[in-house]
Image (cartoon, rainbow, N blue to C red; front, side, top):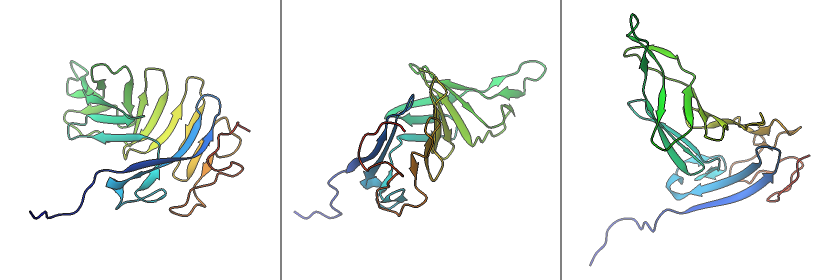
Length: 195
């Protein structure tokens, strides 16, 4: 017997938690995840490694939006609504959740479109059934999370900050690729109390 091809034992994933900051409202956990399926892509921490925020956003050709948050995948159908007579050709942008989903989705694109006009938002706002608000870029990157008390985690390209901390929780601007980061004043891999 002869077997041809590359050995593919399966997908390998690993997550390492570098920092946990329990702050009011939204605790901050900084973790990095390795995925062997992404081994050819340079991520936040080197080849195959990325910041483990657990968000993903996909938009299909029908403009339906599928979100993956905390391991749960939900789809919102793009269902624009006519404004009726005499402006039946104008449509209000609306996203309808799949059965069993109790959150809502909105986008920053034009809210009234001409039938059939493209609607190309750059930012989506998902509100879950608990009232937490997630702002996610059209490229799938998490921008911010806000809880019911107005506490906000902001995720710019160079780190993570919290509205309840006096300093950034994580600053990646001085970190080299492939190295775990060290937040100023926070030890690596330990749970902390907020300053």
